[in-house]
Image (cartoon, rainbow, N blue to C red; front, side, top):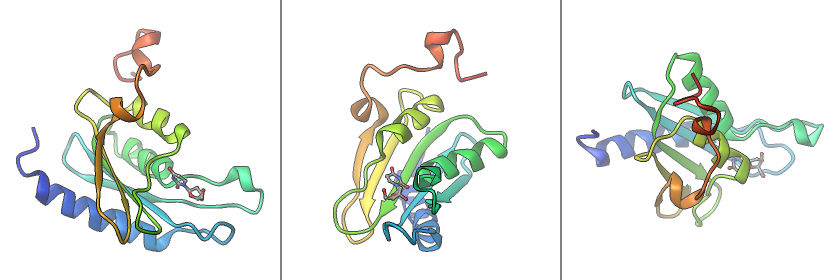
Length: 142
Ligand code: THU
């Protein structure tokens, strides 16, 4: 269990903000940063990286997940997503499914516009009746 969520969320926000500042977004100018609190209580972050061939761009959540997996982790306890503006930047449909792959019933998604307030939702609220590893007989993609 997370003992001090406020402390974790501040650290996660700071990591997401640092990633946001590094985003490569010459086409949309819409920066996103994401930071994951993994099972080992370490933080893994990512930013969106766009491409001149537009569909080849990557979302911030995708990069953060890749960094988590590279570290040998496979459970997202919390993911904090920060993007431009005041309104919460909620993950796109594809990223909800990517988060789903590494989630459990406790996984929380915190969405925030860099100048706004955080919106805290469970993955199940953002992606109800989802398809996941269990449908293929895998507990956590293993
Ligand atoms: N973007 C993300 O990084 N994550 C999301 O969940 C939503 C969208 C990025 C993709 C693209 O670089 C920019 O935001 C505008 O769509």
